[in-house]
Length: 120
Image (cartoon, rainbow, N blue to C red; front, side, top):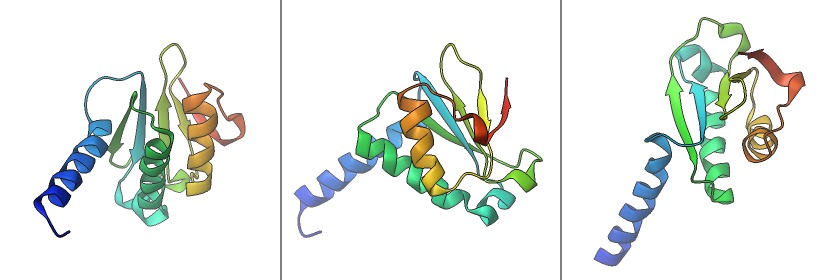
């Protein structure tokens, strides 16, 4: 960073990325970030999720995090809530699975049944 313009550009980029964590949007994705989730790789899953949303230019998605859900053996857990569909909790999510969840479930509305822990 060498100028005020660089700093302003960085500020705008960070503000844009932070928008996914606020407000009511069509799709809500929650990543379990308790210590058990982090130990199982939830930070990589969250980073992949944010990267994938940015790459695809998806702005109608809210990303949040939560603590331990008491299902430590299934971590990392990711819940996807789309309007008109049940909330779906995916287990043992890896960065590669996260990319596929974004492509199939978030973008196309197709639940990946083999990875679902619960749907309600």
